[in-house]
Image 1 (cartoon, rainbow, N blue to C red):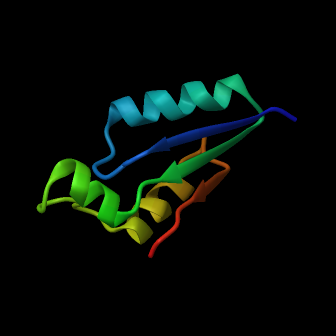
Image 2 (cartoon, rainbow, N blue to C red):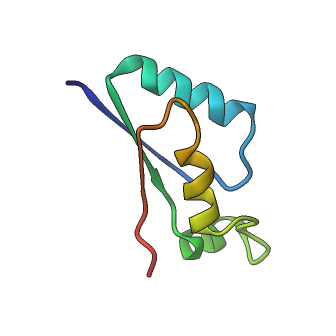
Length: 75
């Protein structure tokens, strides 16, 4: 089994995210998506982000057909 890992913010899901995840899934048999923590997003994108907390982002990703597993570390 070929496993693929993708990492990102995935805060405001858009068509580019879906295309990326579908392509990543096409490359292997099992797609895991690692999600940046809320703290990391705030550092990278500013105090007004994330729009969606890590639990909501994980829920949205979990419900996409291409995603087999989502993974995050919340401190």
